[in-house]
Length: 141
Image 1 (cartoon, one colour):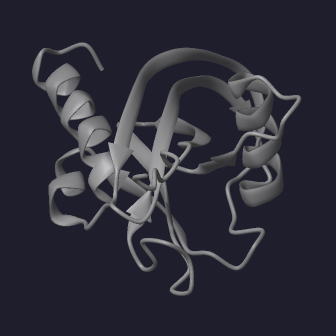
Image 2: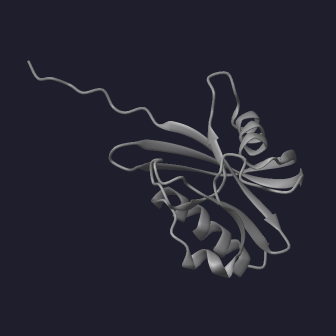
């Protein structure tokens, strides 16, 4: 009888595209983390009882010290890294309070839209970068 291996469940993550004055906020993954050392759009895993918006709000408060006032869905990205599958639930953060700082010791920085092309992101984040650059080129940002 053949042995079947259950398919890996995707890790559901909520992440935010936070913009201010033509720049986008990024955080750098800790070296010991999956995809460590790469830049990402901040956010984190959904807890079992949370919606994506609730997780986004909680994660941005815990990780960056920001209070999300208003956000709307942007896109979803599914990606299989081989060792891990992710489902990124991406949100535009339209209004927030606070000044971003790495509450968990991670680097955070505001980056120009043009500068996004010069940074290293996890493969799943490339779809987000591409969409931001497309919207910017179309004059929609």
